Structures are given as structure tokens and as C-alpha cells.
Image 1 (cartoon, chains in turn red, yellow):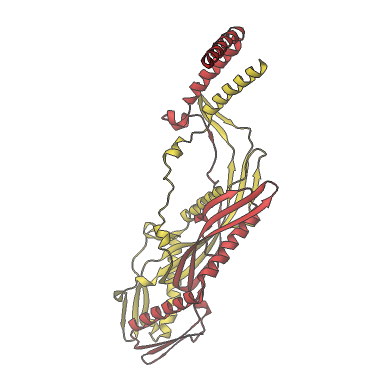
Image 2: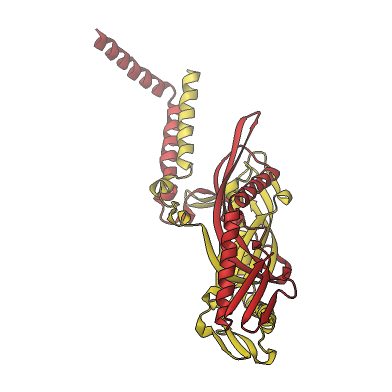
Length: 216
Length: 221
């Protein structure tokens, strides 16, 4: 019974198709032409043509323009680095607006350098008495305020639109978090230990028998 | 009947457009192409060093990019190169790159220091050039986006910054920076050696070799 119904419907479908094909032959001709065109255009796709420049594609410019580079400042420094802390921070933000919740997350790499800025030393920071060298050094501190290489950062997730001011907030968030995590008393002690070790070794190599280092 | 005609037309047109859509097969075939080995990242941390920074350079660049999508290729053996009416996107991104010249004092060996009584000669290792920071001046970024285009994504922004930093690095006068680093290192170390009691006339700071641009180590981290 059911099979008979299906058979009748199929037969009706075929008859209807034949009827429309005869009555609306222009439409069917157009449809077949479009199908042939579609089949032919598939051949224009990248994976079917050896020469990629000949394939049909939408080209976007991702290369930056040639622009001038300005050396804003160039100056001598005298900074001794004793401890390098390589770190990274996944900074994220979210906001809720009219179109739902937006998210932005980026991984920032940072290299925090701890050491002594020698331009901060007092004139008599080093004194010598016979075979003893006495050094007065400041505590090792952060050498560079800017330690994030944004060009090496890795965008992790982005949903919604974000203004430059919000992107700056994300950068500052990562900057603050890295400093908080890295500039611990333990790290500072480690830097001081490294400074003591390096200065002592250098002075012993220069022939001094005793080295006294004071930090203030 | 009109409805049926409409559906059939839509299906045919969809097929035509689908055949022109961008190909994603290549990306699908290489799912591991952008994977990074995280072992190195895990090993990151604090490490002791002895590095003398001698020179600092702050370099500014305004990166510009204009994105006008174009339909290119060949249709029926005829070359096609037409601007799409979807609108343009333009962006100007100012960046500041910090470059430092330094000398790795941990590479000094006993053989590099020769002293006799009041005289001393130190032979320093080659200076290195390091990009210590790259910062986008976010507040000065200007973006113009057509009505039918999306804004520049975070990924595009970072990609542009990377290109800008690499361009700055490529155009650095490395030989001059190394010369400046030598001079600055000598100006820092000689007064220290004089304070330690070595006579100025018998004290010298030398460098291991004459550098050519290809010999210069450039560290970008």
C-alpha cells in the first residue's frame, strides 16, 4: 500500500519534471548553462591550477608600505645586567555591549632585565687599599621600563571590535602583571647575588685578594 | 510555479558562487603548520648573566597599510584584475623600537685579561645588538574602514608590527652601532680600571676582531 503511494508520487514527480522541462525549456536551458559555468569555474580554483597567479582569487594586501624610520634618540649608556627574567603573560579583556559580549586575549612575551645603572654610581664607588677593593653599589633594579616586544606577541582570541585605547589597556595590564610577578624580593636577591659573584670574580682576576661589596 | 523557479535559480546561483569561493583545502591539509614547540617556553625563566649595555637607540616608524581587495586571475582565458566594490581599509600604526648594543662579559676568559703590576690589557668579545622592546603607540593609531569591511584584527595588527620591526632591524647601521658600542665600552671600563689603580698609560681595552656586518650578532627577543 505504502509502496504504491511512493511509486505514484515518484511517477508524478517525473511527469511534473518532464512537463516543466517542455513548458519552461528556456529556464532549464539557463539552469544547465549555469551548471556548466559553475563546473567550469571550479577549474579556476587554486588547487586545480598549477600557476597560482592564474587562478581566480581575491587578493588582499598584507604588506606594509615603505615608510621612513626615524632614530629619535641615540645615546651611550652604562648598564650592567645580572639577571634576565624571560616571561610571558596572557592578558585578556571582555566587555558587554549591545551585540553581546566581546573578548580580547593576547600573549605578550617579556624580558625583564635586572642590574645596575652605572650612571647612578657615586664618584667614589670604588676604592682600593693595597690588595683590597671596596665597592659601593646600589641595589640591582629594573634596567628597562619597556621590556615587551609587541611584535612577537601572539593574538590568542578576538571577538567584537576593540578601540586602540582598549588595546593599550590590555598592554598595560600585561606589563603590570609581568612586573608584579617578576620583581619579587627573591628575584632582587638573586640579582644582587649575581652582581656580587660577577664583580668578585672580575676583581679577583685582576689580582685583588680581598673584595668588599656594600649595597645601599 | 514562481516559487519553484525562484528556488531553482537560487540553488544554481549558489552553486556558481560556491565554485568561486576561496579554497580552504590547503589550510585544512596542514593543520600542524603553525604549531609551536612549547618546550622552549617551559624552560624560560630567570637566568644569571653579565652583560654591559653600552648604547641605546630609540627608533620610531609609522607603519601604513592600504588594503584594496582585487579580483585577480583568468576567466575564459581572459586575464581579470578588478577592484572589488567592497570598500578599502587603511591603517597607520606608529611603533617605537628599542635597540641596545651590549657586550656579553660572561664570554670573557682568563686569556682575555693580561695584567702585570700597574698595566692591564683587556680583550673584549664582539658587541651584540638586541631589540629589547617594540611598542605600538596605540593612542596614535588611525584606521579608516569602508562600510562593507571589517576592522583590522589583532592578528593583522601584530603582523604589521612584526613587519615594521623587521624593516627597522634590516635598515640599522649595524657597523656604526658596533663602533659606538666599542667606544662606549672603553669609556665605561677605562675609568673603572684607573680607579682600581692601573696606570692610564698602560691600560688598554681591545676588541677581539674587526667586524664586518655579516659577523654582527643580532638578537631579537
